[in-house]
Image (cartoon, rainbow, N blue to C red; front, side, top):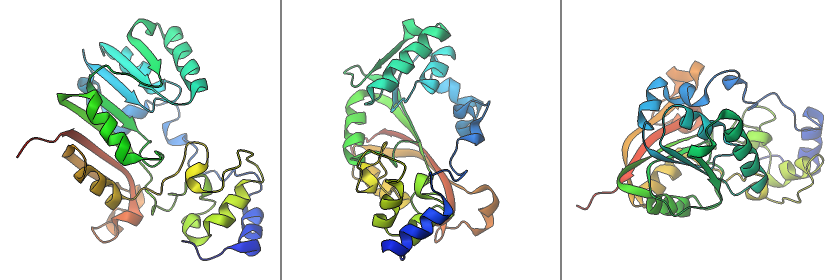
Length: 253
């Protein structure tokens, strides 16, 4: 994928940004606000009251701590990056909810609710993650999933979105070469960068769920705020800002 590559692509990217700073995807939409409330509304707290909740891909624990503060019986934050687990545990301690928060790389405890936000576009093996989630949620439980922007969104390339749809204009090789000027992790593909980037589309996600042991209880593809009139079943891959859904264990037919 991509039209412009080689030295030309690299030089064009360097002329746009030499350090990866573009002003896009900087998290400013959540500045001073609860990310969970922005994404789901205040009703989300009812989903967690007196429940065992797994925050799958908890990062530094911001949402896990907030869930505990809003009445969850227990919150288990799962994260593979050890340094973030340390930060999460410290955050819970400072917030006074360390007695109800556990942060680890894995768990065997069953949850009433699994939460996954801004992660499904990053997982190396999203089908495998759905299988793991199913083993960790009770039969009567649910998984609340949000991710975005999806791959064909104007900023679906995340860091690589030096301008809208840049990740579709430039080749992967030229984008990775540009990134290597300011990142030293040796990544050679989108999937190898810190956090990973698996090029998740809406269609692919729905197919993964269809092939999993979950089924949709609800599904919403939220349009880009100023592109609502442009978003329809034919164009939604390009004009969907985020995907929100509630998954429940698939019932025997």
